[in-house]
Length: 354
Image (cartoon, rainbow, N blue to C red; front, side, top):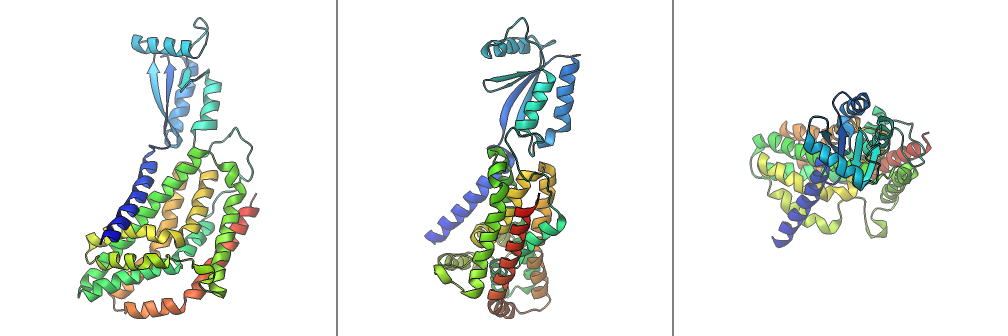
């Protein structure tokens, strides 16, 4: 039980870190905007902030200085620290750390370059930023995950556990709870990865790497079709993890425990299902704004769990999980072939898109 507890703690830690990133703790930087009531240049900056509030990576604290003496004092101190001429300094003034930016044009330009996710005018050279994700590409990536042997194996084992406990009526609720947990944890991890890539400003590095990564992962899946297990590994849950994973799943016999176990088990699936997800999410971070990315991630994960939901309903209506497992075992190589071909096609398309 000691190993199982360690695994659960590690899995929950990974999910927790992703949630922290989602919350913006790692990605938020605080900036101060000094402005004055009735200042037209200040109003331009504030309108820009209002229009782009959801896409800001910075937390902007606004301080009006004409009617608030305490803010006026802070403004003068900031002017001195930035080495500006107090007689000529005015609002709007944006203070970020030790940097000061004045005037509406300069401030808006800085915000576009550094504080907006999916910035319109990055300050570093970019390539391939024009292409957008399309529904077929997102669905294709999700289907690569969905046909992966790992996801099927985990869900079938869960349903076999519920049936073995003589609780057929709980199959539907436990299966849906488990699928919901996978959706929640993968969605959180995707948003965390998106914000991490944007925060680290990795657009240039990822321009070609995303496509190459997808092709490499596809080739590794093809390896398991032509020579299953060659090289001492398979593109599935690592074999040394499987006994612990099975013990975890067999403890899930109710919807609540199925949801909790689903959260923990989700990180067992990462080594064999994360490839397409990393590719799509990283590509989103280089080309899509935050709210649009959230929508695409939701679509991706709904497609990803749809086979889990279908299997759950099938077993609830009388399908035998053991038969499904036998078919899965017989189809392992074909599933790896499909995953490999889809990944290679997706990676090639991403790499060649303008």
